[in-house]
Length: 195
Image (cartoon, rainbow, N blue to C red; front, side, top):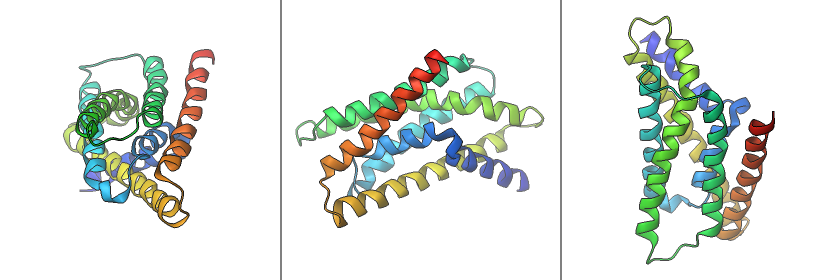
C-alpha cells in the first residue's frame, strides 16, 4: 500500500508540476470549449486521452516502444497548437456535433499516445529499481488521472465564473483560453527547435 501511495503521489505531482506546464496547458486547451452541463463529453474526451497515454506509458516503460525524447518534446506543444486551432476555427452546429465529437475523441486518444511517451522517461527512471512494475505503473497512471481531473475541475470552475457570472460569451471564453494555449505552445515549439 505504501508503494501504491508513493507512485500515485508521484503521478499526481508530475501532472500538476507547474514547471512541466505543457501537460496542464494541453488539458486546459482541450477542455476550454466545454461547460459543466457538458460533463459527459468532457469525461469521454479526458478518458480517450487517458487511454492513449496509458497505452504508450506502459509500452515505453516496458521498453517495447522507444521514441526520441527530443521528438516527443517537440510534438507535445504541436498537440496543443492543433487543439487550440481546432477550438478556434470549429463552430458548433447540431448537424456535425456527433461527427465532431468522434473526431475530437480520436484526436485526444492519438495525442494521449504522444503525451504518454513524454511521461514515460520520467517513470522509467523511477521504476528502474522496482522488482515488478505493475503496481507502480498503475498507481502512477491513477495519480496522473487524478491530477488531470483536478485541472479539468479548475477549468470548469473558471468557465462558470467567466461565462455564467461575468457574462463572457462561451465563444469569447474559448477564444481567450485557446488563443493563450496557441501562443504559449507556439513559443514552446520554437524553443524546442532552436534551443
